[in-house]
Image (cartoon, rainbow over all chains, first blue to last red; front, side, top):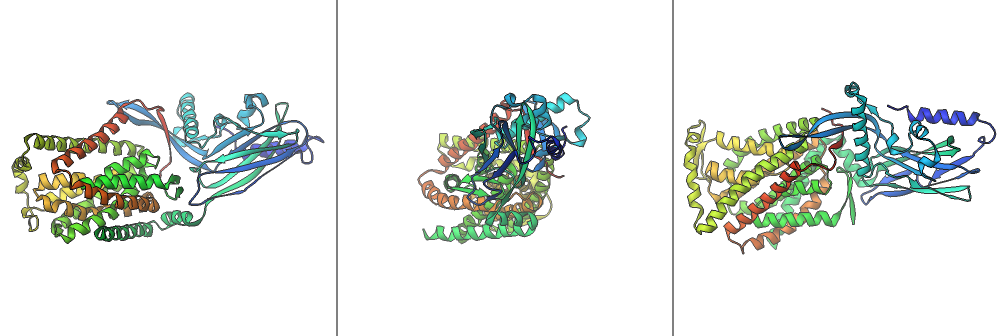
Length: 252
Length: 306
């Protein structure tokens, strides 16, 4: 279990703003090429450019987190010769998407402890174990947690290695963030950290909204909000299409 | 060219889906089966979530059965009375199946159930069909010898609620087709298939219906059973992807034309042995996947409310 990311962020910002003259003012500014990712019918994933400027030397780390979801992790066991889902652990508040980018390898920038408390790197993603599973041994839960991250990485929703951030003359930086086509809709957050001598001295956060637009969005909301009517429409369309096919079939 | 499927929430290549529809459509035209038992595993294989594959395939089968039944109806090969009784059973079975589906989804056992159903039913049907057609080819005789099996089911003829089915030339208990319909209905909901591959042999061997009316009657009742599955899946799990179903359908309609033209060139028993080999191959693949140690023993899924 890890602390709430926004609370931590506020702490950092509060700390930084009290920290004196060097960090005061805008030592770090960042923005995105696009704050709104539209999932259209032709959507195959997209790239969003994150760019910014920093005053003085330092390392930049960018963390993008997707909307939280509840995930069930299941463990297969061999029963009577076949593999069957047996044990399961529920995790709440799991970001659907998690990407990280850094100007240098993370272990060169700061210590593992700081990476863990700031939730930087896929291994340090904050999760809350479901209420029913908290009584389990910590080691067992850790195994399930590791499996959760591994599966997310395999489906392309969690980054495996940090993407590279290029810094031009210790001032301007930019990085490309890849959003895959299987990403969830909702509110995403990009947090940009400035590290100096292994300490996070400043962090800025910026939102990204991912939503379905156009006909796809309408079909989705129809299917979820008026599911009975959607079911009937699906049948009517199928009957009509089948009849049409039958008519064409006869002509040929 | 890519298309984002709104319900499956993934991007697919349009030509891949059309090609899959075309390929399965060709086989269904060739063998006179719906092809759901091939399409659903194939959809899961390309990454469509299993519940979406099942719900969408049911929707597509509605369409392909409608176009199939038109031709049989014109030739008078549909026993509506028998279809109606099968259908009554089918409604009961498929409704129960959708409830069961949601329950198993919550338990995390839906994938296993789908695979086990495929393994068992494809194994039995494929094995029987293979043995029967191989025997026929070896003896080069008509299939009439196997029809003798019917007389073992004497107790079945003793069941109450006897009904006359004129088109099928049968006087049997209505409970029999009702049970067959219900059983196949459960499988339709669980496996995302029309159930023709189980229904057709059951009608021939269990009910003793003449082969000429079997296909048309089974298609007729499959329309309603899969429509019921489509509706119930849309309401309970929201897993019916209409755009995906339409894409598959376009391919399937075209493919089926070529398939049925090609089928004239092959003998009945040759068709059956080819179909049985294909069924057994799918069965073997599913069985192998259940036994072989998975690459990752852990899997993740979003929480499904009970």
